[in-house]
Image (cartoon, rainbow, N blue to C red; front, side, top):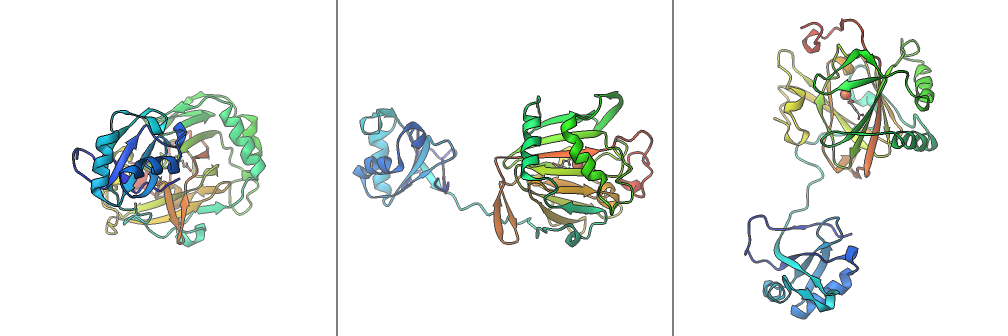
Length: 343
Ligand SMILES: O=C(O)CCC(=O)C(=O)O
Ligand SMILES: [Fe+2]
């Protein structure tokens, strides 16, 4: 599919260009790019025909000469075109769009391993589950009802996570975790180099399904809601996760006041430090200690992540399983400035 280098002019009606944005026309309605090129070339030399977006029903016809585009627009706009299956075309001038930069100016190097990030308590295990287990886990959640949020879908097990309070209600258990999760809990309990992984009984799971390009706002999981180990299993598609630690004395932005493509000052190193890690499908991330209590984590809203000089496209979806233990008393962590139990 063609790379969308052009866009429909916004509020620029009448601004002429050698490129036409043609709606109701394209491979999804049985018209190949070659057929479209041959019909439009009766008005002048065509440089190329490209997909305008992923719909398959909108194309860009790019002429060498602006005058050819003008003639074609006059001849074909808003009327049935016999050579294009009698379709009623909607044509506008289109303007060239600069290729979107993969490496946005707020990007930072993305590590493949947790040790490079220098965040105490952060761990990542690649291939924590097999491809078959991944398929089974996805099939299990796809068989159960999803709850739609604004941009993603979620499921909760054990206890419901309440987004309004960013907490859970300990009096409202949803019952035991379902059996399809048991092999993962078992494997977590076998992680040997963690002091208390074997003893901790994880009792809450949130499944998040992110469509391509959708991320998650910066946040610290509420201290009073969950204990100190937070595991997150990535399935289906890759993404990067970023972390921020604010300097002492700097008040944290409210989780909902930031969207990830609207970071207040991305390079404001006087306010915070940032790190990024690549999360491939089937990997398990652990936030513990400082990583869990003092660093904000978030997923930038990118369709493509730049990882070690490779542009990695997010899959059509990423599904994560976050495993936590609900806290029943106040949090007594060593990071009171981030702790809702201690402030
Ligand atoms: O999708 C993820 O890996 C992280 C989810 C998360 O941070 C959360 O549910 O609090
Ligand atoms: Fe989180």
